Amino acid sequence: MKQADLLATLEKDTQHLSMEIRTLRHQRLGLFAGMPTKKDLWDVVADYFRLFRHGLHASAKFRTAQLDFVRTTMATDVVFNAQYGVETQMRSWCFLQWFDDVEAELENLQKSTKMSLNATMTTSVTITNRTLSNVFPYLKKSSSLACKLVGQRIVMRGSARFDWDSSTSRVTSVISQSDMLTPMLRLLGSFEDVSQVFDQALISPEFQWRSMS
Image (tube, rainbow, N blue to C red; front, top):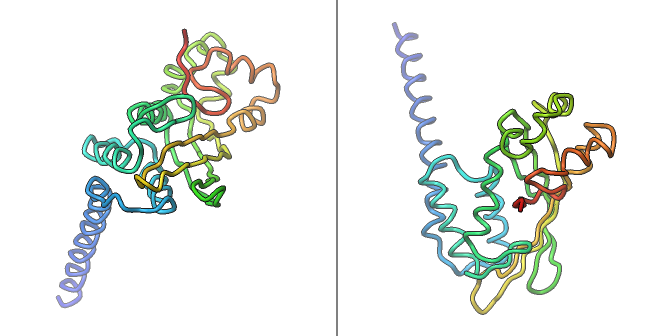
């Protein structure tokens, strides 16, 4: 009887601990919306990669927290690659929803100038049929290439430069890119096939979203 009581207590404690862990994770994400803005660039960049490690959150509540974080740490006219604005930057994350198991891992941060940091990161995604339909839709006509891509885990090395305005304590520019060309070439085995994959794709070999005219 005592052993049964002990097992019941342990099970109850385990469930309670799991609930506490989930609550703390949710609180950590939710707190970004109310963060004080007086942070330095190192803090902002580290938080940026932590908050967007898996792309846009599936929960609308936490996506709002992500947007609030960007709005409170970045200039309203922030440069994001070749575009401008916070909303543009958030939209750039949207294409990641078409991949599975997205993970962007910050590997290193180095000061570039007094007001800028260079980040190196690894971004990993899994290509699915959903990816083909939304990112490489024309590949359905090339079943051999489609078969080679579906289910594959793509690991890309990348970098990002963050520029800072100390007078406003906000990021003014984010220039980033990831090398999708190299793992694709390794996977497909020829430049001709890689060229065909990216020819009409909605992403570039630098893993940047692009609109098709």
